[in-house]
Length: 90
Image 1 (cartoon, helix red, strand yellow):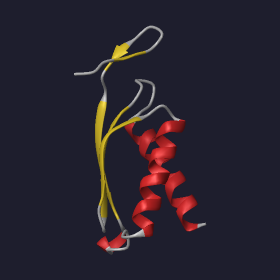
Image 2 (cartoon, helix red, strand yellow):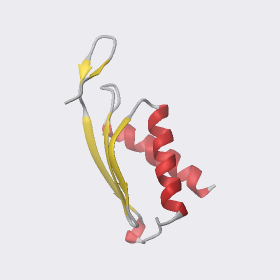
Image 3 (cartoon, one colour):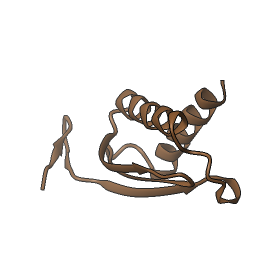
Image 4 (cartoon, helix red, strand yellow):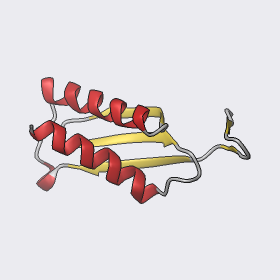
């Protein structure tokens, strides 16, 4: 068990997220899967979100993250999916 420390807090908050492609199309393979993995890592580093475990499959992504207490789960996913999707489509 690993605790994280803030200026006035000690916390261990972990969320398990799963998201799928539209109609479960199997589009995440090869270079696309590598790019998704890279973009998720970059986004998490930018917002101080630590990835505990993660898997990029052909039609879905599993990710277990540890985040600061000031970030709501919906905000975490908005940031990860928003940045990943916009940069992936470029």
